[in-house]
Length: 320
Length: 314
Image (cartoon, rainbow over all chains, first blue to last red):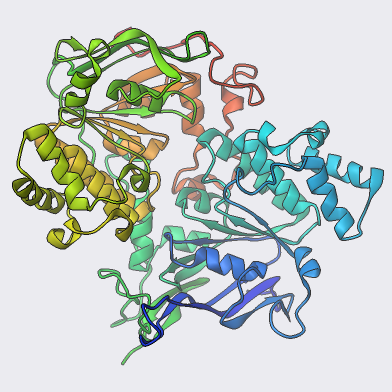
């Protein structure tokens, strides 16, 4: 929070969808997929967004990428808006942020060789062509742990882990400052996951990249993140430095999430203790109430993200 | 969720698999290279491994659900003094769903999209118990209630697409446990579910099977799930069972380098507070290079079984 202009700032972002209605005579219902989310990503950091499916974490990522038009709110890159009037075009955006997708089997074009896929970006952006482009592709493939002659091959010739490396190489070709990682590990085997985590951490350090990682795997999130935001039904319910969120999980939903992780140490040390929450102001009530399922169509109760410690905020209901 | 140790000495296994070999076609590559394991009455046995290790094929072989060109080339699967592999298709079908039942990973593809939930559960009672449909439907509602589906009467009339993933998996469990089987094979039952939903579904499987004394063969790639659910664990790699131990012993003292690699490769909750943001140990650093090449097709490369726990049948 010391840096006056963070690398990326998501300010009051909302994405609402109109729900299909049986007939036009029924009232329009809105689904609040993302509701007033504000997050910041500092240079060189990894911001993780966690939550269960349908909580709006992927929609938030798509809005950052410009793949989903927000209903309201802005995404600022170095203080300049990425959406609305005066926003950079798609080609400029592509050089700011790139995305690594979940499924390395579905996100590569099966009919194009790896080399052609990677060089096409360079020529499209007029960055390099011919042998220079080939050299840059070879360099990139080596950087992600593949060999330069893999450029001649096609996606089906690679294993899942290798494909995810290709996905990372593709995302890095234009030298973006931000990588949005949407569940980058969930399609991979345990042993391959470790390799990709190591690769991502190494690249982050060497290329000074910033990550926004969408994940439901809390062990991985704890391991690699600098900041963590927990989303529940479209809203951020707890947010802060990784240490604050994982050592003093405070919102009941964060606590439930952490408590649900099946832990292999549990068998050795009887039962893992859930860390105690940080103290909250007297009489405060957490919002939303997680004992019942919130209605995603209803207008949520008034609530605020309240600071409860250095670099640690939770959502509390507004006092009536 | 943990059961702790088994207390009885060594009861007769309800299912014993011996030297099970599965092949693609007649002359094709082998998928399973002689798997042997015993499942004791009422225990939860975990089968863990990566994709392609043969853990699902083992489960499908026991169910008799291998699809061509996969076929069992040699080996025996004994259940109640009969070799399942020698039974005809009709006898197999009578057993399947009745005494040996299965839960699949993806409940949406495993359920029939054009039959109501109630019908699909009631079917079990009609086929295996000879009930009439009216009674069977009433029993189906009770079964839904036992897997903690809220307002079971209403849900019995619903179709699979109207339910959430967690609810669908509960319906699968209701179908699988309808006839009170001796053995439940759960193939990655919670992989498609959210972590909070997963906890509930695992707890349900654990409670119901413990109450009925049903043995469970839990196939999973998630060591955390295995640690929380199972009394004994078998680790598979490329068609071989490479290690088998009591759960506590396996996690405290893994013998095979591959198992050690698997355990080390996962970050654990809370480990960063103590150890910082370190590189994770990659499997190749523990299992000698060359023994696991990621470029080569990994299914059939033979490898020495280096260590087996004492007491496990060879």
